[in-house]
Length: 68
Image 1 (cartoon, rainbow, N blue to C red):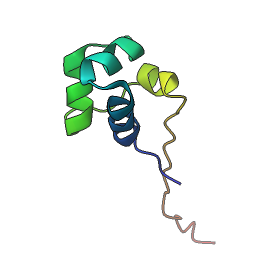
Image 2: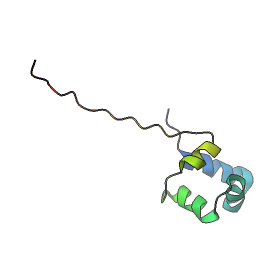
Image 3: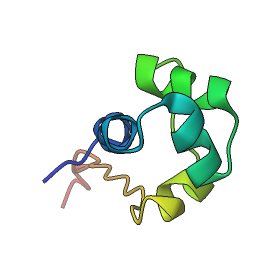
Image 4: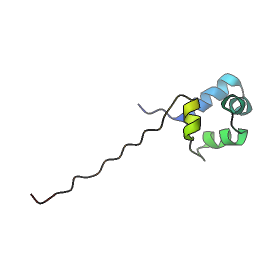
C-alpha cells in the first residue's frame, strides 16, 4: 500500500487549521509545507520520519542471459 506524504500533510492542515501550524508542528518552514502540498518538492527523510513514514525504493533489473 502506497502512502503519499502529501495526503498526510493535507490532513494535518485540516486538523491543525493552517499550513503555518503544520510547519510549526513539524519544525519546518511554511513555504516548505506549501511546496510539499503542491508537489514542487519531495519530503525529505527527516520529514518522513516525523510523519512516521519511510521511503522504500524498489528496482527490478531484467534477467541477463548468460549463454549457458
